[in-house]
Image 1: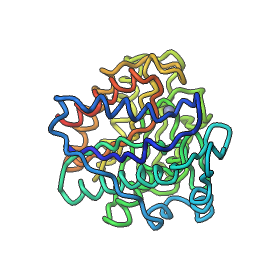
Image 2: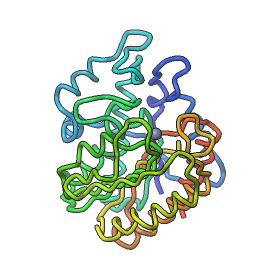
Image 3: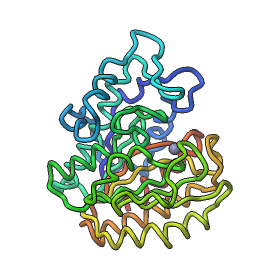
Image 4: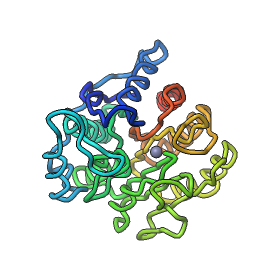
Amino acid sequence: MRLYTHSACLQHDPGPGHAESPSRLRAVLQALDHDRFASLDRVEAPRATREQLLRVHTPAHLERIFAGEPADGTAALDEDTAMSPGSLEAALRAAGACVAAVDAVLQGAVARAFCAVRPPGHHATPDRAMGFCLFNNVAVAAAHALAAHGLKRVAIADFDVHHGNGTQDVFAAEPRVLFLSSHQSPLYPDSGYEDEHGAGNIVNGCLSPGADSLEFRELWDGLLLPRLHAFRPQLVLVSAGFDAHRNDPLADLRLGAEDYAWITGRLVELARQHAGGRLVSTLEGGYDLAALAASASAHVAALAE
Ligand SMILES: [Zn+2]
């Protein structure tokens, strides 16, 4: 089990009072700096290359992000997404971590990896930064698995409380990728309805505000995991957002850290059954620092089992 991260991911700062603060990653890394995680193989994330990013994003989007960094302060990309000095490097390392993790598991260096990175990625569309996301890290990883490793079936499981609209947009016409998402609805970004199927490769599971552990587990066991099993993925990617936790300030679900251990265990088991155990997870949301630290620890502990 490998942990990819980079200190550059702490430099991206969307501004005072912003929910997606550097403290989030500090909280996760501090939680993983514990005896029980002593055996994690810690690796510094490389930068994603332009070629890797262009599999998912338009040249215009790359130019905007490469040229978007202000000399100081912040530069807004939309009402809740901004760049600061250091944001480009952070975004390149975040996407690069996911690419390197895919290479490592597909080359057999390690079975599973967690990318403790920010900015998050799953809202970034081919042509647009949004929802705190600059590059779509998990989508860049999936595209890399297809293009560089020739995989035919890559699954992305997204349990962030928000719909991964960007990931869905990237792969809606790409049947080699199955995208499954559980999320609160209605909620930002107002997409991910159950009638959105893409090319038959998109499965959205909606949870009402107030939904708890039982409803979350029923959704995965009843709808999402059976679809994932039927797909027989060669690689499992995970958009691991922890903002469905009951203490999270940005949403209204009522999960606890034990639910993240549960879904992670299910995904590890599925990866063992179909994908030779190969699973790469990357950090998305999670905005209550204590809940995030506890949930990410539970996730990584279950990945390491
Ligand atoms: Zn989220």
